[in-house]
Length: 116
Length: 216
Image (tube, rainbow over all chains, first blue to last red; front, side):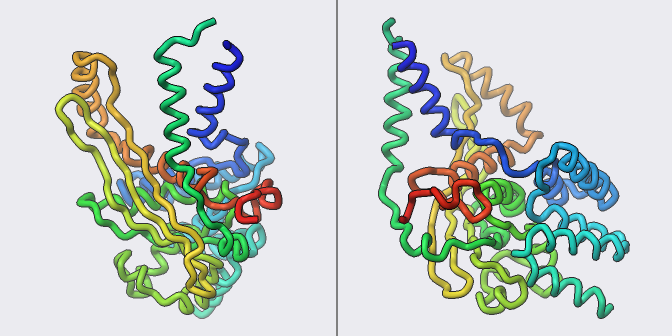
């Protein structure tokens, strides 16, 4: 009975938590920063975002886990807000290399950046 | 070893919960056209809470990406749309698919509408509620591949009446300054994506993409 109860409990918990499989990506603070940039922009100025995102990317590499979709492109966008177009281009290229699904969007951005 | 009544009730309750969402979903079209990439536009907002759209938007990338899809950078897309003369989600939702396909290039677009959002103060408790409906559309054909609901609520807790009263008061004091909706929204999206009965199919970047039996 105890075993049954345990397995039922685990079953119920799994159903509720989608059976927390190990995550594919190292998430860091990407989504928290997105939340902050809309909810309290003062806490997520470009300098803070660059610092936190580059640190998260380093941590992902150290942990041997892939950086999630969008992180490099988001970092690129923040660099461009700072006027650092060199780093912006580099990060957009990294996003495209890791996720070729982003190619149409990134290529368009890079073309428009070059025209400026 | 007898199972205590409370535990038994809980199990029956969770079984009932599971059965209630077991309605058969037809995955045939979705299975034939599983997208590699999903563009999530800032949601339409039917609630009275102005910040709902962007709080929601900050909790949707992770479950979709962990579900095996490439998710376009939501804040970059939002800024890009605004730069192109589309300041509000309702205008963004009106962009024709062929234009989206040409400029952004997603395989599918997720259109979300927030129905209910925020803290409801009740007599002996307060509850934080997030409810949204979502539609995944094939960017090439315009066909709806999947529809779903993101729904979660968090109670202020406590079991007895007095305890609940105290908990509700404390909850209102502490959490009125902390945005609970962020966490509840995350919970709602995770449950929506990973629901094994009516959630999204595992995408091409998920380890179980090839073994996911749904729609086969």
